[in-house]
Amino acid sequence: MSDINTLKTELTNAIEAANDLKALDDVRVSALGKKGAVTALMKTLGGMSPEERQEQGPLLNALKDEIAALISAQETALKKQELDQRLSSETIDITLTARPEQAGKIHPLSQTIDELISIFGAMGFSVAEGPDIEDDWHNFTALNFPPGHPAREMQDTFFLPEDESETDPERAKKLLRTHTSSVQIRHMEEGEPPFKTICFGRTYRSDWDMTHTPMFHQMECLYIDKNVTMAHLKGCLTDFVRAFFKIDDLPVQFRPSFFPFVEPGAEVDIGYYKQGEGIKLGKAPEGQEQKWMEILGAGMVHSNVLKNCGIDPEQYQGFAFGCGIERITMLKYGIPDLRTFFESDTRWLDHYGFSPLNRPNSATGQ
Picture 1 (cartoon, rainbow, N blue to C red):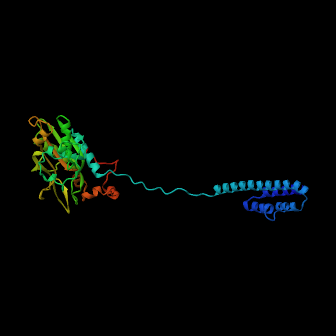
Picture 2 (cartoon, rainbow, N blue to C red):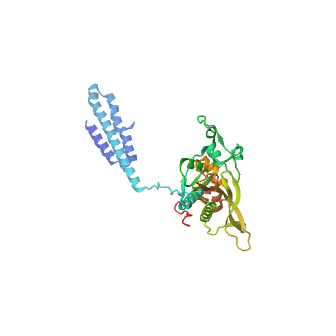
Picture 3 (cartoon, rainbow, N blue to C red):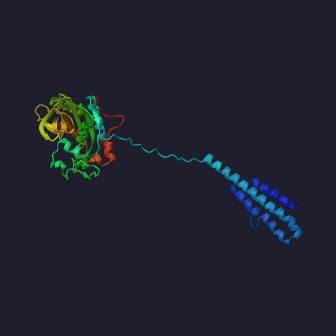
């Protein structure tokens, strides 16, 4: 018994004195290893009498368990101490270099539409909307497009399956609208004159090259009231193009042209002149040739269109005009290829896009 107590005291002191994990492991081996002191005492049980073994066995097992528990506790304490020392002495930079943030840009088409809304809003026009999927009536017939017109052909128009629930053949025939003029028809059908609206939207035609895409955007303007004349149209358009291009004396001319839904109809040109290898919008300097560029079509709304919408052409008349938004955007901001508008190239958008916090405004001239 005295040997067990003495060994327990020695091992306890050795465990407490171990100041690192290696020293503690040496104590464990010297106590509980194959040749350890506690192991040696356990081996003596085989040479004892049954009475002695019954007495010494529990004491030796208790010693073995207690020493193992002390070693385990000391090991936990030493590991914690070692971790605390490492945490206090070692530093690890876990931060990453900040990722560069690329600011978003406003698409040139969105910028142009906002400018147009600003310009025409100042003139008293309100924005109207209509569906991309139209029927033959609103897209063609109501706009005075006669049967057999080239615009009704498959090579120009994307036709869709007919609506079998519709009894009217012209309303059952579905297609992707070829112009936003159909919005004017819907607006006139649903309301009462006077009308003073402008609409924007996607239009679809079967075409694809540097200056044409299967989908593009159009703007349509409509003004219906009593005593509206061609002079109002000319004044409105002249003010519009001069405000949009920010050229106060921008030359504007009207050339007679035919459109089924207006009479008389006109192509509208703006003036430009050669400057070096490029062109510049505006009045040509003295001695230079004044050149003209067509940008939109216009005219007085045809009486048949008014009748189709339930409006008396003897009481009301008005004008309409429309243009491709991509065309005037390319012209104003120097974008050479129409197809790049729809390629989703962020590099292109970074070059031609506009900062949300610093955008031009045609209405204010800024």
